[in-house]
Length: 447
Image (cartoon, rainbow, N blue to C red; front, side):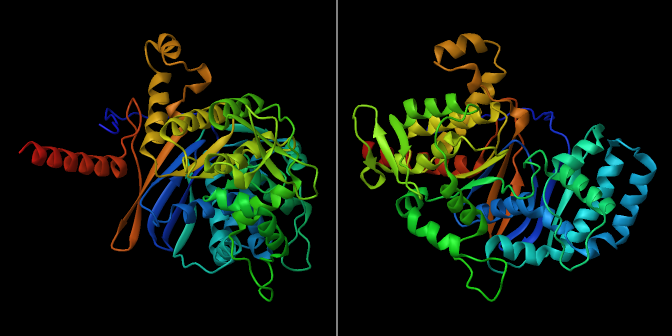
């Protein structure tokens, strides 16, 4: 068999993340319906051109740009805000507030109201074009109570509340806006408004790496806030990816140093280095050569993996969430297995990682690492398989969503996990059909 996914009794998944919610859409582009529970590790799998990148980009925009929804006078004049304010006044003291599910529901109702008012402009700012959508909203997932220090939140959530007219918000309105921002997004984004997160690593990274100087020049000239100026051909997540190259400072980021060394040894067989140019020149230094090679002389494995290594090595990198489109692209099956270990180690370091993928091999290794985590003979198998404890993956942190095209509309289904991983019909059905063809051809040869 090319791949095997095990089925078993599904069980309730738990993790320690608070303030959980799902992103829900109806008739968003070609996606009919979707409900995505935002989790530490997420996989979007399914057919090409089924909307995986579109939905991931929308999720990027909700997390990265959602705070902009609070910058409008209408947000503080609606009934849902008045209800939220009333509860806040009755239940908060000078310094603290217990965030419970009742408060979260009021907060989500308010956010969804202003999201509905401004979803078209928000979507246009993400994609640099208009995309039709009937509904975009978030749905609360019940969580436990959390007591927070209000003064801490006010100080930590930094940035200017620039609203759409000349009237300023008062301090009280700013405080509630900051509290909403903290509750909804602090699990996935730093608390500074001006820090663009998640970090988005797009597909076709080889093309970006070989032409990044030209593309950076275009992205710096782009305007996506003024309809009178030519918009970029790229989405805002990709513009953000390109612009971050300007500020790269590749030294040693202590948080990810061991993971970068692992990638250099097991994947790259060398290092990614940069020079001191204002817009950096990026090179590959093979472990067996004492010279730096320009990227156009390297393999596609190097150019595909290089952006991940660079951002993990950036001494200034301080992002909470990483989106990777097709991390398996241009990788041999052996390298895909290593990449699954890289993703697992990133999760175990505390980073959120959201992925689109077409690889059954990559996903099989993810399943293996989840199964290993709960295996009765884990310590023995770690030695036997030459793996480390940081390669073990907690299944409660993982969600998998399958994108299936039916009559030109995409249905998104949450795959239910078993005790040993996630069964993945989109891969299994194709593999089964392929094996049937192998058997038919072998039978013909024998005849």
